[in-house]
Image (cartoon, rainbow, N blue to C red):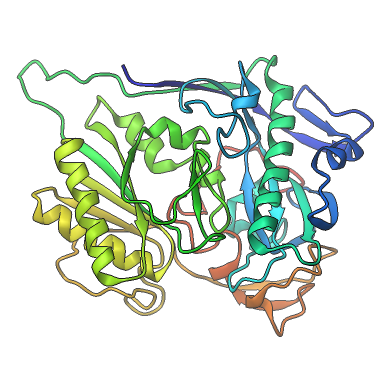
Length: 424
């Protein structure tokens, strides 16, 4: 029997600091001193917690993860199992989610890709994350602390706050409930069966920091594996750094495939492949992944996606060809397929890859001067030479989440149902 996951959403319309951490009538009140005590660590040189409100004149620098507060209703200690919580199978039972608020992280360790985000003004329209309240973990590594230890400590602090806040919603009446389950699909009255669709995603795991975790286990050197869709939605798989984990919690391709399961397709499961650096290894990953879709999941066709940049484009292209060679028509999702010139951000050019979805593109934006800057001392390589307070002109390439939105959809439409806050 398939896993059955129920997610109860509690809508958050207001967030503020106060004397007691509480949730009532859509208002989340946070005792800042309490949270700082929960996440204190000698691995941090300093730590602070900020609130950012939709619509305010505020720019957040080096923001590198956002997550919806969630926890398992019956056993909160098993939320994010193996990563933060106790080990237990994810993807089943009841999960509580606070909707409209994020727990976010500022990343101080050196890296060549860091994002920034405007909470208000014209540039806020290009990131759906600006529609949410943000509880921001602002912590830099102490002297001598390795990047790996810092990344682990930062993620642990953020997940501690995440679960702590989500627990406030366990006994609340949800504003919406969703149930995710892959029930058996029988042939129609005419004996015809629905097309069996597999979802294959290449995730980037190139080193200890730039890595994703499965039940707390590093994906480095992983071979392609099958995972139940609800496990991805429910915290079994998390990025240590790079993509926002909100995209895994609310993975729209999984959600859409599950929504259409039993109607016009049969969703047979997910294959996760690991981005690797050598061309022969990329071929191997693509072949194994396609074989799992074909011979283990029994797929008729495959939806391909990726989380990563040019390297992952090549991985996905090779996987596309292996799927087609095995008799499974494939469709490939890419962001930035074209900007001003055809294919100007592509590293692949192969006419046989003839079914491509373009999920986003770049825009040049005029960034105004802001009244508030969070993470001012965290370096953002893409903004070198700019006054981060503004004004400056920059593309959405590194505006969180800008163009790297393969796991989310086009940022102009995501979370369109969230109410306008702060005059937006």
